[in-house]
Image (tube, rainbow, N blue to C red; front, side, top):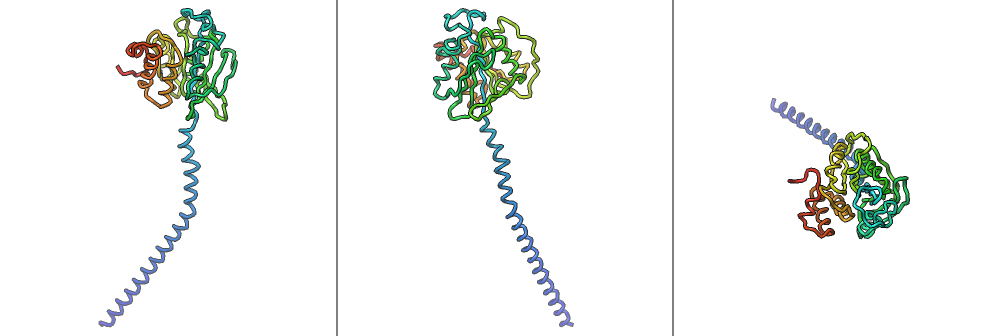
Length: 299
């Protein structure tokens, strides 16, 4: 009887060893198959990362950012302004105009700025614009397109600004193999010049909100009172407006753009503008600071 029990145990023990051996074989086989499969698919995973994930992460950084500046040339005859010297107030001559070719005009000032390079000048790109200058910010992928509108076409200038702010007017231009958005396709819109809304009402425009919020700068006397209600109807962001009379010259614009390029907050950009205005106008910071406004400005 004892022999039978020992044999039985021996049989079960041998069966257990066989089963464990078979299990190990199966495990080895499964591991080998897993290794073979992973060896084949890992290159595809790497390719997916390179061609799908990686390009999207880069494109967000490297896509050109564009600024479109609409300048209504100073015009003694066609605008309700206090007259300036004739050469500065000839709205049909960009070369010497107060807001374009003069010392603190947009073209001259940005052309002299070390971090901006003038890459192209276009004469009469359309019937309202006398000259277009395209700048690129060094060390970045930021382009600035500045348009000198005929001073007699100030209504068209402001109308184009408003239509651009909600995207109903948009265009692109190709520069050095880059597609640059202008008007409603730009990332930042700016207006420089006389506050024409003090003199006239805009033609009837549909001011529905656009799908994207665009940053808007309006450097003109008391632009907040006249432009902010319109800008808000378009869904745009009033980045920098004014609360009083001021000189809409390019140093203020450049200071604001410097902050915008660094993705600063509205209030930081406003303070940059005020400091630049203080410096060039040689007034107190308190006086300069009181001129500029941004949406959601701290009290």
